[in-house]
Each structure stands twice: as structure tokens, then as C-alpha cells.
Image 1 (tube, rainbow, N blue to C red):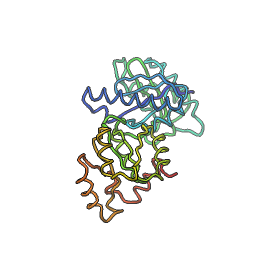
Image 2 (cartoon, one colour; image 1 turned 90 degrees about the horizontal axis):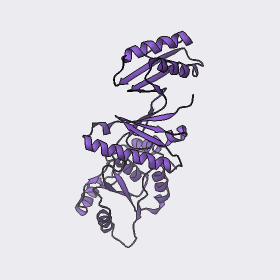
Image 3 (tube, one colour; image 1 turned 45 degrees about the vertical axis):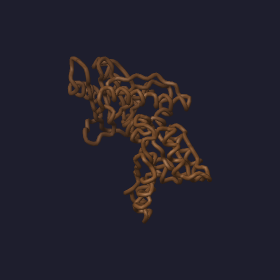
Image 4 (cartoon, helix red, strand yellow; image 1 turned 30 degrees about the horizontal axis):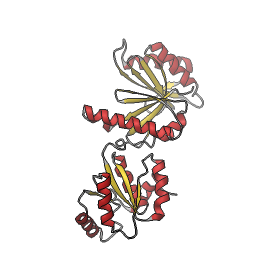
Length: 302
């Protein structure tokens, strides 16, 4: 059965105050649209109480992109039906029957919001009994061969088989501009950590050999390409102050790390004496193995 849509879930956004939540949701939706459009994927999108629903005929391609959109906790390719319990059961059976090979057990995970003539447990009992009668599968709530999620939301029901984990964090661009000092892969990783917290990076490159890797990273994570290179005859601190002023950067990001430099405290003290905005160093306490593993995880191994 072809999936009809993708359910997008977010986490931290839902905890924000009403106006902040609305702004963050809108930013996330714009980021989703922009990323998908960059790959020539055009969508219909709907927002509804803690969920974003994306309708597209390019489900698999869209999933690969959505996994890298900051602010998304998980996604699920899904099919849709109405609130009628018999319709829910019929569609659930159809999905199970298409996935029976080498399967002996199943579990239903039912969630419901809105007013209905039944509760979640009654749906699970009804649909579960119908599946058992039709397929002879056993119910196993602990370690099932097939797991089916049923999400009933008012007059609509969404059924899906999996939740795909995504990058989490906050939508890119919700926390203002930051200036990221870039000279190697570690510094790109430091920028990535702040991007995950919603910051929009301005990349100040002090080592031109890293530019191509940086451009690949920017494209991979659907960020805006704002790259500034250091002029050889210009003082670094003077250049930083100019960029901070021109782009209204609220913080400076570096790759300082206590395990990789004996003079890190002295370096940071000098930097903070020269720069008036806050300085953040996300890698400060990470060991080399942790940094190397994370660099691979975010695709900086090329």
C-alpha cells in the first residue's frame, strides 16, 4: 500500500508560549518547504495541534530531506482514513496483510484526540480481534514482529508502521544570527551544534582549504550559504567586529576544546577581551573520539 502523506512531529516547540510556538511552527514549515523545493519536491502542508501533515507523491525522497530539518523529532509515512471504527479496522487489516511474510505477531499502538463514541482501548480490542481472525497472528505487546500505529484525530485517522527519528532541536533561524569561526571540520561541527539550537550561522572562514567541505555541509543541512573569507591583510579581530555589526550577530562560535589545546583558557581569555558579544564553544569538554564520531554522523567525512 502506497503511503499518502508524512506526519511530522516536533518536541520543544510545543512547550513554548502561544505566540512563540506559532512563530516557531511557521519557521519550521517555511524551512520544510524551502528544503523540499530545493530538490524540486512540491507539497501540500497542513498544521494541526502538535502535528504537521505533508502530502506529496515523493514520500521516500521527502523523508531523506526531513531527517535533516532542525526542529523535527520524528516522522512517519502514513495512510489516512476516517474516524469510523470499521474503516479503521479494514485499513489496518490491509496493511498487516501486505506485511505478513515471516511474521508471527503484532501490536497496536492507538492514540486518540477529539470526541468519539469509543475510546482508545476499544479501538485496540476491536481492530486487534479483527486482525487475529483474518491473519492468525498473535498479539505481542512487548516484542512484536509488526507494530501498527493508529492515530485518531477528530474525524481523521492516520495509520503507520514506524516512527523515523530525526535531528530534533529548534527550527533553524528562530534564535537569531551567530558568527561561526571556521578553519576545520571541528569548527563546522561546533556551528552544527548551534544550528541545532535554532541559530542561523554566518560562516567566517580563516582557512580556505575547508571551503568546499563547508559548502557540502551547508547544502546537506539546508542552511543558507553565508560564507565570508578572511582577507590576508586584515586583522582577524577587526574583521570579526565588522561582520558582527553588518549581520547583527548575537554570539561568536569557536571550536575550542580542553583536550586538544594546552593554552585553551589563555586563547579564550584573549578572544573575549577582543570581542564584545558572547562567545560559545560547544566542543569544549568533548573527547576526541566523541568529536570524530559526531563528525561522521553529520556527514563531514569527505
